[in-house]
Picture (cartoon, rainbow, N blue to C red):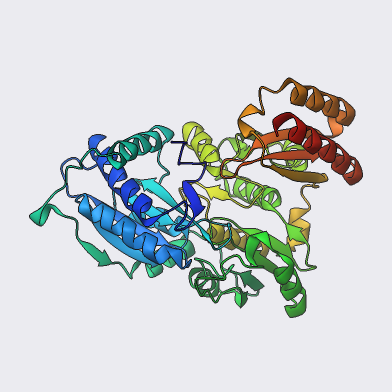
Length: 452
């Protein structure tokens, strides 16, 4: 069996790759593994289970809840809430486990399962590996040790989760948003209720789009992966800015008053300076991934801030932050982690803090984001290749070396196997967009020939 867990949980086409049987089995396995690890020692275990609005989430939620309860875990079912809300509630309610059903920014037919440990943190790789092993052992015939009678888990809806999470978001804001007009694109996703409520309570005048999920329209032409509607709406309504989330609202991208995109790197830069000013940017350091724009690195150096770079994936950003005690980190894609207030990327919190900085300074988003200049960056996805040979192909290594010599100090090359899809990502930065496109195109051709 290939590894089920990618960089962000288990994902696949719902009811094809990700079946009810798999969801149930993984949930039972997770309960047994955490019990073996001593997580449930001395008390009756509890899990928080949430989902995004995908139609498939309805039956997958039922399977997860059934699996956990059959393993003796009491379940608090919080319904449709963002991934960071489930993480927050797992910690705030003292639960032993959190489970989120979502495929984030993926198209509607996909879904996924993400497990959180006690405190709302993502499970360690070794625990995920153990869950897979235990799941496979029992899938092929070994019987589970099942509780009976009063030992089975009990299930109840926890409707208070919505207000508890929104109250948390408002409580951590440094200032109110009165006087700001903001367009929110909710991607017809998990934040369709939460985000507008939070921004309104914080004092902003809001306009919402993509806030009518029907189970089928999540991420469909809207949200952080499709910013066209938000750009148009911000200009049309004369808003100060626009905020876009993805399906599970762990991401935030923004649009300034002129309709220009503000990506995760720029948001990180703005928040880094705000947190340094407030004295909350521990070590004057920001954590980002190797995919961050070179312009971000140069801006941090110019501002006297240190940058730590990790492998791609917000879990690796978080691991570095926790290990070294840093307070801010994130990804260009809009995953931003403010560790004092969240254990994972939180798109609503990020958007609120960005808007709070605008309100506090009286400066426009365009002016604030201008702290860094984005160098032209081209990303090419090369599908249907053997991504496992990226680091071992001599032909590919030679092509990358040639490209790096051509770009010199004004650009860079990064080849990365996708953690969730069967493809290789080719990223090229250069001072000139045409040069970046040319180099990226040549490297993509080499990837196809060398790894195809």
